[in-house]
Image: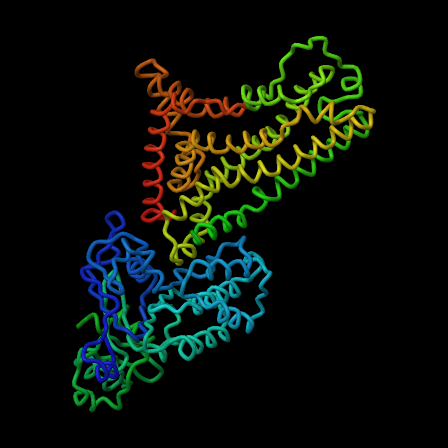
Length: 301
Length: 312
């Protein structure tokens, strides 16, 4: 997975994450089913899936936090055997609001400053100065949103090659979510950094992503660049009289709207859809629903 | 090394009540108790108006022994000018110092016991382990730092607190003697050998630490293994082993062996106020203990790396 710009500037993209045959079982329950995954440098990858789809397990496997079958290489390292070395270059928020409650904010800053060679203390302090979090406060005194803000301030002050964020803005209000994503894109992200992010608030990160991965029942059901969505997926709203024609073209999704139906198609010649009306690129949220819950009409196909 | 200092600092911050506040409170309480006794009861520990003014030893041949280290101290003190009428003060002083130190060390024992049982469980329970794991610190570093804190750093902290109170007790005893118109440099000072007493107590930290090394590692393993109660995980296998041995073979070899070689020995060392345990007599036990410790720590680190989630 790499962008056109990368292709133009580099003969071959630098692959930072390479997973092959990634499989994970909890007892008899198959959580990840033989996943192959490559992530290149300088990308912002959205890993999207419903609860229990396996996205957190993928992240944990990449970070060496869970056992698995298959091969994974992150920055050329084995995430299980070389986890400590790897974490000098990879930082993550595996879950929000998990900072130790007994810790003071100043102590959290001091701890990360002492153990992480890539941590910029002044940057973290600067970020925190824009919040209402006081350095002398204990984590237990902070609201859930403030804990998340603190955690993000810590993580974003680390000069890491890969940043892994699992539901980073859970519990935050819309204002801070917008601010966070803006800061992530404008202040943190650059072409030397790669961000892997999972979230339920798909629409909020849509504009941010360079690559999109959908995971469902432990399998990747979509893995493409955002640029490719435009040429691979089409959404058409038709009137009732054209519904049967639209269904005949094998949409992956159908949903009813006021006065008509909306169909989403995958890998179809755009000309075939011309008779149905003007087409557009579906939103990530709609595409997600289409991929996760194919409509009745689509299932009939 | 820098990481270790940071990790030790982290433990003291997390457990500041047990590691710092408690010994400070104990210092305050013991000091208050001494002042109370001095003011209202006319005594400090075993010192009283009656004893210090009327105790006269007729046995001028009696030997002086510093009970923290019998042989060497006795020899050392034989060279001092030790007025015979004050010989009994030796025992009183030693008992006072010992009582103070025992109070602190017994408290430290329970603090460490609960610390080791909980330390690798609590961060998994509240999921803050995921934050610690997001830092480039290995589990080996984390586990060994916690073991060091439990075996050395906390006992040392309590010992430092104990020393300050022992020093205060000694000064108070001299002031007390002086107030009773005795020369403290004759009645008290010759019987005080604080450097040697403190050195002995300092040495005990490491000797007892060596003895309880496998037990401590076991507590850490139980802490890392437990899904609900580290205490039960630590106790149940031991009790089960003892019961199975008794029911099937009708013997008590296991509990006898543990008692003889590990737990009892360290308690005896503390109780006897002596460091004269000849470790060479227990060399096989020590080596075996280190091997067991290594095995248990390896398991603990593996658990921290691979089975740290409580809900899976």
